Amino acid sequence: MLSHAFEQGVLVITVYDDPGIGGRAKLLSRISDMVHAYRPASVVVVLDEPAARASMVGVILRVQRLCSRLGLLMSVATHNAPARRLLEAAADESSTSLVIHARIDAAIAGAAALGMAA
Image (cartoon, rainbow, N blue to C red; front, side, top):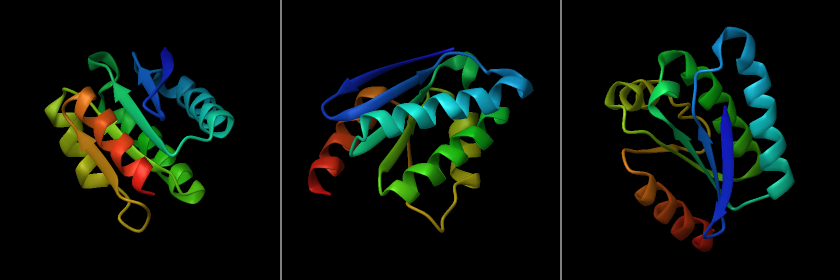
């Protein structure tokens, strides 16, 4: 369902599949555990094509709120243009902004640069 890596000081979490209705809470819990364990300056969530569904927007927004509460910068990367548009429309503007990228390398480089500046 997911994997993670630590690149350039950025926690990169890749979600490969939509976990379905019953698996979203577990996915959110696993991501939350990783964020708390690594305590990175920045987090990038990569949505692989099967995971880039409208149903994942809620999970991403909850992760955004978690990162905002912890003072972490958060980005999402997905090649799926409709998913990027949904995330942009739904992003919680009252918390730390959610940066959305089409390219994974750009998301990691941007998060690393912003993480060093913070």
